Length: 68
Image 1 (spheres, helix red, strand yellow):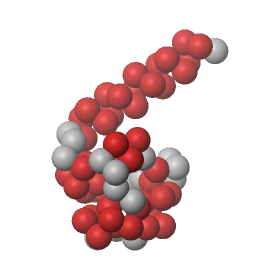
Image 2: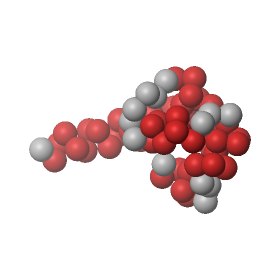
Image 3: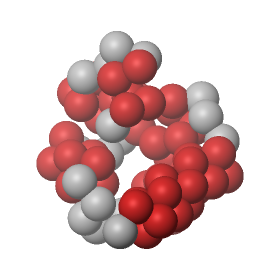
Image 4: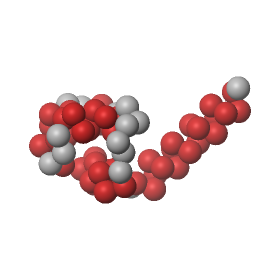
C-alpha cells in the first residue's frame, strides 16, 4: 500500500494496470490472500523488485519482534 500511495495510484488505477480486482488488491494490502504471482504482478506494475518488498517486510517484522 505504501508503495502504491507513493506513486499516487488509487486501487482502481492499480487494478487497471495489473488486471487484478480492486477487492483482491485491497485484500493483498491487508495481508490476506496474498500469492506469489499476484505479488509479482503488483511489483511489476509499481516498478519495484519483489525481492526489495520482501526484504523490507522482513526488516519490519524483525523490528516488531525486537520491540516486544
